[in-house]
Amino acid sequence: MAFHQGLADYRPTPLTEVPALAAELGVGRVLVKDESQRLGLPAFKALGAWWAIHRTLQDHPDVTRLVTATDGNHGRAVARMAAMLGLESHVFIPYVVSAPAIEAIRSEGATVTIIEDSYDAAVVAAAEAATGSAVLIQDSAWPGYEVVPQRIVDGYSTLFREIDLQPDLVVVPMGVGSVAQAAVTHYRSESPAPSVLGVEPARAACITSSLLAGEPVTVETSTTVMAGLNCGTPSSLAWPVLRAGLDASVTVEEDEALLAVEDLGAAGISSGASGAATLAGVRVARDKLPLTEDSTIVLISTEAAPLNLRD
Image (cartoon, rainbow, N blue to C red; front, side):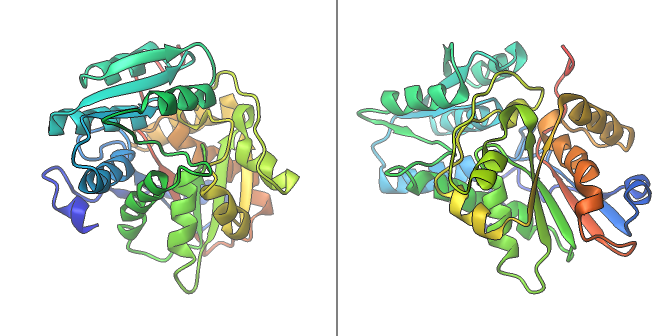
């Protein structure tokens, strides 16, 4: 957190109360952690990526190029920091990512390679390209590659440390599971600890499928409006933390996420489908959660709404 506080653009993001959602869900309070503007970018990803880059360059000062795979916001955050440091960046992107998201990454000065395959395949391609003076800055982990992903998770902890109240339920989106890992790690260090609900697209439910199977599994993915959560394989670091510490997991459909985008927008909160998935998820799971009329829910909205979301 001290590192983030030392950045010129750092400020805590808003925690916005939405009474209409509290009334709908039959609870005392619903607050949305609004990550639509974070360190000059429209998503929370810079918190993790920039801390990991900072620590990696301390260990490897001869690095000249940062390499990553992304569904959008993570890659842009890596590219932004590379440009700020005078480094090159190379970002691998699965073909399902929208043209505006790709152009946003290119606008940061990155070399972009489109992979005609899944996010998982883009990660493999990025890892293979990180040779010589290049280093991989990836938010998903696998055996043998866990130092950088753990630093990214550590960077996300600032988001949760900024929340200055004691909720009963925290709802987080899950892609490979890294931000959910950060949530569980943070809240399991507190007493009393809130419940943590993880949410992911029905079309890319690698964490829920793994929880049901009792072991990490890879699922096939295609397209989803929740582009930032379109991941087929859990992070090897996140998996044991989520298996042991996640209270519940739920999947949401496309229309449910889009409705949540509209409803958060009506409350003055700009949220993309990946961020608004948390509202969609708590709506789906509400009747199975131990909530009362006095409960406080915090929804983590991880990104701003892009233009032409329905296109």
